[in-house]
Image 1 (spheres, rainbow, N blue to C red):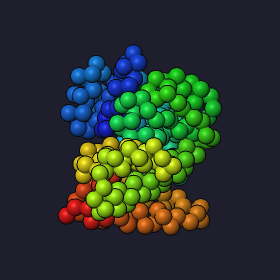
Image 2 (image 1 turned 60 degrees about the vertical axis):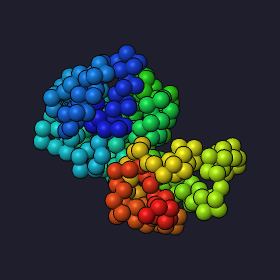
Image 3 (image 1 turned 90 degrees about the horizontal axis):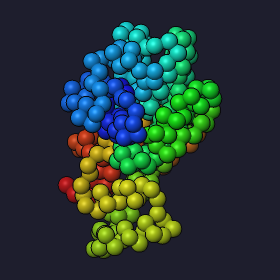
Image 4 (image 1 turned 60 degrees about the horizontal axis):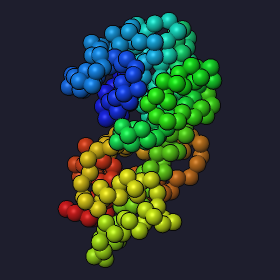
Length: 284
């Protein structure tokens, strides 16, 4: 596993719990040490991990880091075992995903476009799914490994298609989280008991997964990161770019992006994206 942040660590921990051997690397030594403390093996570098595993998962925060780690000088394709599988799990652009698939397979490796639907906390408890794109035979080969991490892996088509599905899913994450923030702000301004309001809302017709996950954060005004706001802004930019290329109207996303950007500008980038509620004036 290359990239041991919130999501990468959660995925690696699930693999270890299922009895798999995991070698991991991250630019932050503390993250590698955290994996080793769980029984994983510390990798010395990207090529070191690639040379020691038949399947390499990539879970990195930026588009540039994904491209450089996979294709760059000293990247994993320079050291990977012939025929091994590269599972790209980061949220990147569909265009880059398609190019990675072409270049990785041209170098004698297999490639799977495999973003995760679910926050790091959800993944840690085995909730969520993998959205998978690539050759059906490659998907069949690694499906048991994927389902050791999460209960479901769904093949949606060629490389690039899974990333499009992930962007559509994250569009809903952004809008639904903002909707939860707006609704609970109204309830707070009315002086209502937010715990009781959440109990009613999550049991009624207006519920959503994001209300269940982020509603309690909004009510407590405490935003421990499941998806850091600064990383989610990258996803919003990718959604806008993909929608523009497709000619798809996204007026609600336009509004949501401005509010998330306001929370980011106010210094909340390291907090969970539920902190968007602060852009509605809930607290200074």
